[in-house]
Amino acid sequence: MIIPKAGKLTEAQMIEVEHIVSEFKCSILEIEGHNQCVYAILGDETHSLMFKRIAGLSYVRKVDKIESPYKLMDRRSALSDHLIKIGNRVIGKDSPFIIGGPCTIDPSCPSLFLETAHALKEAGVDALRGGVWKPRTNPYSYQGHDKAIDIILQARDETHLPIDIEVMDSTNLKIALDVKVDILQVGTRNALNFSLLKEIGSCSAGTESAVLLKRGRHMASPDEFIAAAEYIVAKGNPNVLLCPRGTTPALDGYRNHPDESITPLIKGKTWAPVVVDPSHSVGHSDFVFSCSMASIAYGADGLCIESHIDPAKGIGDDPKQAITPDKMKRLISSCREIWNCRYLP
Ligand code: PEP
Ligand code: MN
Image (cartoon, helix red, strand yellow):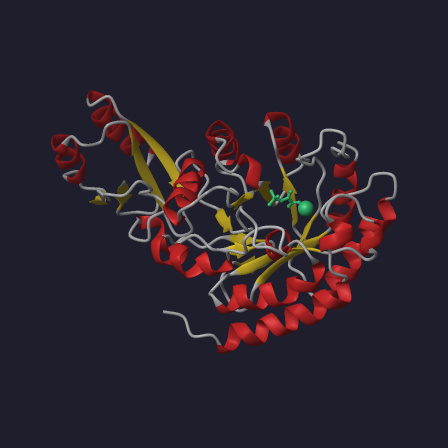
């Protein structure tokens, strides 16, 4: 990774660097960090002569060679001070970043989503979630509809809250980017869909859209999770949030095996913020509160929680998992207390 002395390489400097790396059959990718741009060397970058030539350029501060399967996501990377901004919040600063909203938006009843959005704004959430396109296990269950996008856009207009939508394929992605969705969610089923991760990274590079990458249900180690996120960052979008959401096999009584305790292990390895999803992890509204508190205690930067004004009228996971906005309000206040008294390494 090349770190320039100034915030960014000029066009002429970029041409010179590209010329050098192309001699070694490599290419350069600009990644826009919070304070400065860094430049990933793509290809076989083991050539020490290439490194020496780049390091010798007057405008290059340093060329980092990080021995890691995820050299951009690694804690030691030049992106380690990268801050992710969503709406008016910087993730990881001051208090937990809370994403809330229904599992699924019901296009036949927009008022349910809109009223939920307003109630959640009142409860103190920082962003709204709502499923437009849904990855359903049963092919005959409701699969989502393009029409739902207008409803969540209306909610964004009315509440001024950023929005989080899951994208499952290139068509969803294009629509979501056209309307400048603030958080592109990658669900657990696509967590290892490397072609989709690469496409999301390249199409969202240079935009304001962040990516919430859920942990794959079968994703064993923190390394595998972080390496999946590296696909997105290595295509140009460093605004990635890592989302543990429970793994399989389930712990008897929960929907999945709750995995909020993986948070400090992830944080020891990468600079990327962790936003835990307690709703899919435990799978029952009664347990969401305690799982949220535990997540914050473990060091999570935020939470993604399913919430609905009338869960029984919801679609998908809402009847079982969603908490009401008044419970969300209490949850946010308790999580802030935990946040303020936690001791992190
Ligand atoms: C969701 O957020 O509604 C969802 C389907 O999540 P996951 O991919 O974690 O199952
Ligand atoms: Mn859901």
